[in-house]
Image 1 (cartoon, rainbow, N blue to C red):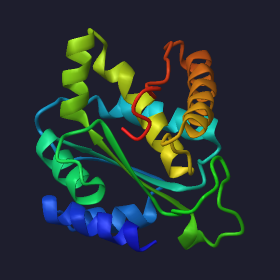
Image 2 (tube, rainbow, N blue to C red; image 1 turned 135 degrees about the vertical axis):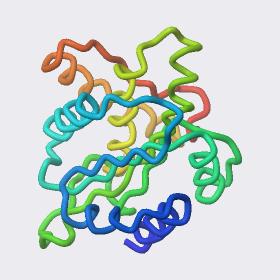
Image 3 (cartoon, rainbow, N blue to C red; image 1 turned 90 degrees about the vertical axis):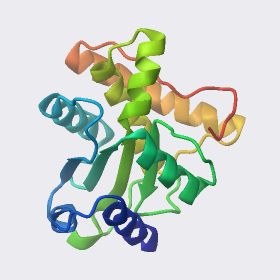
Length: 194
């Protein structure tokens, strides 16, 4: 729970917006765009993330989704993972010791918080260009990966990778069925902790 406060403090350090704190406490889904490099279709992103929340069964939980540029995601990645490079997604779970796939139970309203997901949208856009993929279609895949991390899934070992891959595949198959947008997990077998 203290990590959540550190992330919010870090967020304010990188982009001093005091109202963010108030909204994080009261909204079930907060999407905050703290970058100007990549144009976002916020309505589509919100619709896709709400669909994912429904599939995961986490609609009653608060979730923060913060979109940042390469500079900010790199600083956060270095600060929390010791990796001085941009990345696509960083997840900061409210419950750090969740067993993979288990939702927190018996909670009061203030504890119905899964955590925050930082999307490195500039990095994601660069990857999409390199792979000739549609940026807005890839975002739900990356958000699904981030939500898996909030729910205790990891990919540091072969067994963890397999478990997380299966969960992502199941979620994205259901997402494809509901939206008609065919997607595959991005979790890579090599380099489990990337």
